[in-house]
Image 1 (cartoon, rainbow over the protein chains, first blue to last red):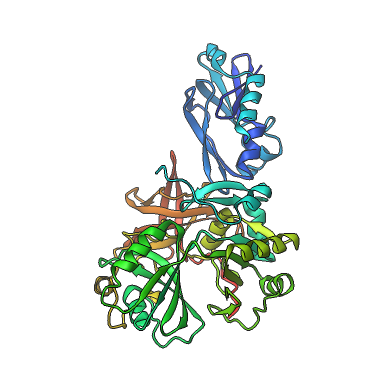
Image 2: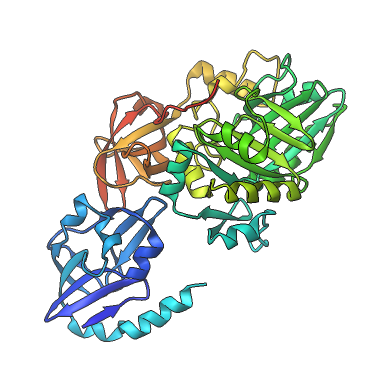
Length: 123
Length: 361
């Protein structure tokens, strides 16, 4: 199942694991990504709080976690090639989190609701 | 800060080109069109055009014009030939910078001052408040002038072929009057280039011709990455009311041998003692980008200052920054650290002119 935060992070839920990245809409808005500031394995993340940042030439944008839990994996390919995010943000995820409270996903946006939100952000 | 944003005479054309617009210095300005990197590379490699109509203009004229400009300006305008442009600052009595500006000398009794958009009201008040006792007229003309910057190695050819303006006879930091226009060989990118001041109608016409000829429109995003690489300061980052030109490493634009100017005593004292802080260049190890305001630490973790501007340099592919730091930590080669959010990255002091400018001298 795929869910989103209004701040443009997605969480793909498989069992107890959330795979977290940024949406295609966000990747387009950012422009070329030059650095992804990621936590480390075993770090704790909290729903709604920042777990890192994504940097374009212009600015740094905080990354917010859609769920709470413990980081089990980071996408190491992004260390050498952060632009993978621009190429395919849905497959080039940022972190995987073992969720401490899987019921938190109920508060996230469905893909349909997220799409509506993006449409309203376009001027 | 609910004041309405001002717009330049090209605003509708920027929107029509799909520019990302954002407030800067009280104006709704284009930040990027094609993207910062593409625009940056166009200026380094060929030519780009910027709308810089947000800049402010003030004419100072009258029998005491030269003496008055020398009173409020750190550089020396006496003995300059007509048609010369000089860079410098206006200072507070304590040596802090009111603004940095260009002064165009039209004649001994007629100077044209170009000031930063964000400081227009402050500067005009400052200039007028110091004019008492001088036989000068201070005429704020920002509403009358729009401005384009044509920048990059192909600028001279573009000026001639697209706009019919011959710039070949203009040396670096000189200007001429073409009809009602002022054309100078100046810029803020570290490349050869020209700046054109004219009325709204003429600027719209020239902008449209340049875009139609395929010249890359460039936003303030790459204006910042370009000037940063060339080690040029931006007021609000490397210069401020509480930063002196000596701290910013701009001593060559401060003529302490002039008999007097506002701020001279404070700077003479600071020069004798040596400034306690300096703007230094930093190279950051790793991929993190040191942005404005991030803390700079020594190798033991003690704070020594803060980043003023930082980017992943587009031309050099390195992570570099300018930072205002303790002068004792500012020697080239000094190992330091920069805090980027939760992490601390090693950094080294390097020369702050990261990119060697290609000016046509």
